[in-house]
Image (cartoon, rainbow, N blue to C red; front, side, top):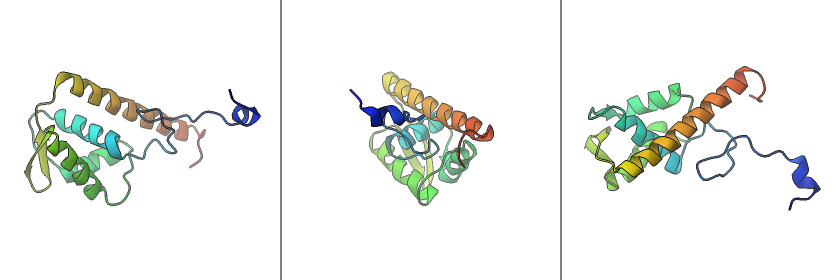
Length: 132
């Protein structure tokens, strides 16, 4: 069990989909970035969307991407193209592909959790219960 030091440190308020603590729930990268992008693209049905639109959508949602956002998104979507979940239709333009039902549900679950965490973080910040 935990010692006295464990009792003094509260558990982190936010965790990623695998249970790892997050310093800032707004930071988005790796698997969760890919899942959120797949979810946002799939929500558009068969419509083509540009990387710039995805950058704007994520930023409006309160997410933060490390480095150059357009590069982070295109790199993440390259993985999804290789897995057949997204189709590249031109430079910086993508549309949804067929995603198996169980995979789609898992992607939606992770995307919803992260969106909810950012909403909760923003509410706590607005209430003044978080450091800026």
